[in-house]
Image (cartoon, rainbow, N blue to C red; front, side, top):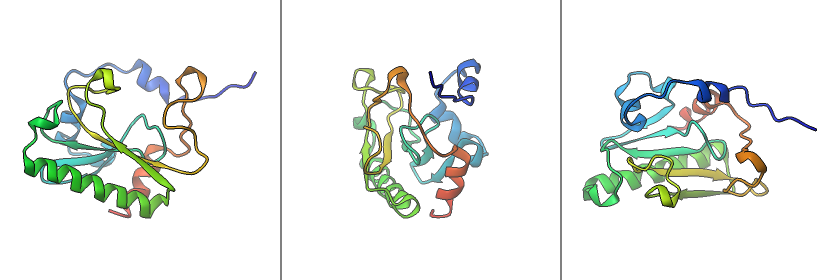
Length: 158
């Protein structure tokens, strides 16, 4: 039997659960590198997903705490889409993927892990990588680069 080790996961498993919304809390903190916040914009921000589907998986998040697109103003919606496009361009320059999955999951039934603060996902994809959905048993994903290293690599292209 072969083993797949992911010792960094124990920190997530054993950590004390913080109250409130982490997508509201992170941009209020002063340490963007620790929080992997890549870009702060007027009404939204972009950060690396701490539990990515693939290397370079970014999230674009409005500062406004809402689960619904309908709660965003036209200006906030425009900012969100503009930053999503900018992040895609950064990932394209930095990682040279063959494609992207870009989208959002509205509501728990739609797959939202955080269902009370909407956000876009931008996932770089390469020909031959695994399917967007988990394809192995045990909900395992293999991400070949540490978040701090990916953050530093992407920051060069901001």
